Length: 402
Image (cartoon, rainbow, N blue to C red; front, top):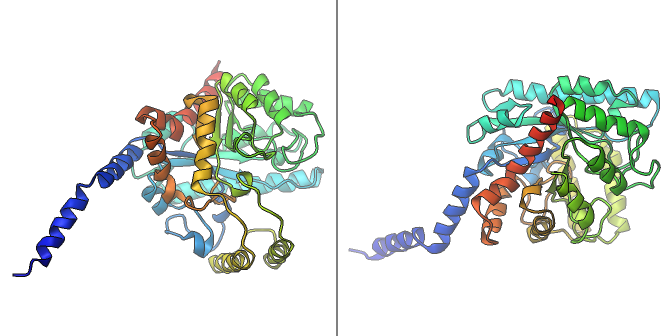
């Protein structure tokens, strides 16, 4: 009788009980036991792409997408904040009208996705509803308005979007608008405009969680001071780790925490490391943009072609890319400065996020394992993954009820 099967069986049995494997299983069990919430999914930009379905498993290398139902299951993700993102355009009546109509279509695409796949997704408007779906086969869907440009100067539209399910809003994106200064544009209002201050008051009245991501430091500080409820930074970094205008400094982080707010650390490479300019790469990417237009591809085939061409350009003109270790530096620094009750996570997936070793939702369990290895408890990790964000959703709505 050959001894080979017996030896192989012994090796398998030994591996199954090895300390490393036992640790891995314990890490995964911990990850599965907490509510895992990402506060910024740009995935709704794909909902109108013919042939792309959130129920199919996709690959980053094939079509660039990072969020879908199978990968939510694989990554132990219970739900997320699905974003109505509107790029900043002309601050004219016509520009505002186009932005309003665009955002209304996008929010209805989110609602339609949740309705079409109601056995796997549930639209929620409260933390209690989200917790009720956690650890079930249904993933919860919050809705956020990233950039309030679609409102124009008409703040009554905040109630329109609230009535359609939006429970988080940010005032501004990468360029100034009529509400606030952007972190990545020269100051115009000195932070919030007078209209922006009224926007804060209306968000408080409606119970909308204020998101200061992309706002200038001055605008962020004013939102912290003016808001009757804690605010959130849904996808931001730590300036002390990497000095970028989109990241916030320690002093502002402490002010955010002092008012009960939360900073969600994001995973966008350009906000984490220096990427030297490369004229050839930038010209090739610009030409690719002109070829496919600024809007989303119409079909999955076009999306895959765009992804393949972009990958080829980046292979020809490689750029340095941040890593999972860089992400953890931001996260651990924020916990040290703001405290464990004021920190969370967003990959900024399908919106530019993704790092070496942290490519899509399937990599989320790595964070739980890294936090556990750093000495954090299950309760600590539960706060970071969803507890802190759900708390500020609750506090925003409680302030409205008062």
